[in-house]
Amino acid sequence: MTRSLLIPAALLLALPAFAQSTAIDVNGDGQYSFPEVQAAVPEVSEDDFAALDINGDGLLDAAEIAAGEAAGILPR
Image (cartoon, rainbow, N blue to C red; front, top):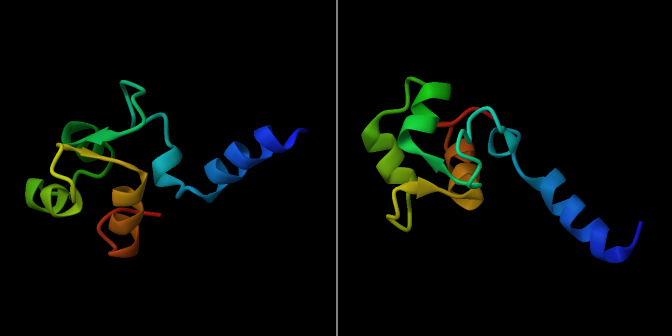
């Protein structure tokens, strides 16, 4: 395997398990909307989601998901 393939593979392995779930990311855009998160973790409220959505774009990216896992709001 070439170095250019190893780096992206290593990054994918470093992502949290929740962030890797294609079952959660229904539309496959690499980010999670509130409906996608709530379908997987019904106890996450809109307020929880808004607190995790640091950039306010209405979606959770990998860094925001990792922060949610570290805070215990999202499962690992």
